[in-house]
Image 1 (cartoon, rainbow, N blue to C red):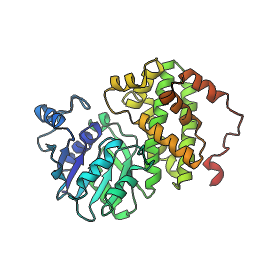
Image 2 (image 1 turned 60 degrees about the vertical axis):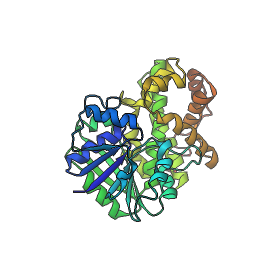
Image 3 (image 1 turned 180 degrees about the vertical axis):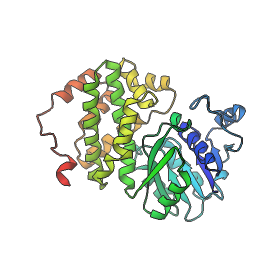
Image 4 (image 1 turned 90 degrees about the horizontal axis):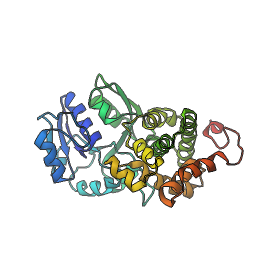
Length: 337
């Protein structure tokens, strides 16, 4: 039995708290907001993110950041833009060697750093790991069979997390490619947002399949340019997460994209979804990374134009379809392995 604190009381953080309780761990769920903490405590339910899922009394719920003290594992489940500030708050609390598991997905807009790199800057005395994969909180909380992958520089840490988190309905694989696992989970949100836009426009299955396939190519291009393993993107955090986020109505990115495709503004779409749409932030950061590294990512570039420069989605599709003729594997990782 381990003491585990989850920082972030959104849907994914709440689902992980329930999963860990199933494995008989001592679980604390921390909320940034006193108001949300009190709302969850009042009904033992996260009505905004996981309606209908009861949170047992055995899960401690608090807004006191000191809950991080004396924990075997601390899980970071706050939105990507809150990772650095949260890490700063716990830096003086957690001891050297503390295991920190990041399950948030995104790239920091201002620095273009992955979230494990952000955590490494703020918590250099800790052992950082990341977990990602096709895992909607709505399904994990209902014990629907799910698989994820955990990555760390330490095989001992990945083994500890694998042993701690695995249940009969939540299977975890290990990997040592932290960068690849993180990038897959970040860039897929941009592609999922684009898939939603296609749905909102009334495009067909052919169009969506093309977008997902070429989106995976862009994900691999960026990853390999940054030093990630190409093979990682064929796994759970790459194509696995891409498939589920692009096709499911559980996906807030796809839902926001549908609204944008139907003519709503980015701000209106995010407000209607009423949860953080990571694909919007990830698009800006991914575009910045691609420009910095001179990586060709036409889908991400067109998404950026739609989200931030007012380009019409139909015009973006036209631009993509009328690009210069190419060989399918031109510039792809397949030419390098």
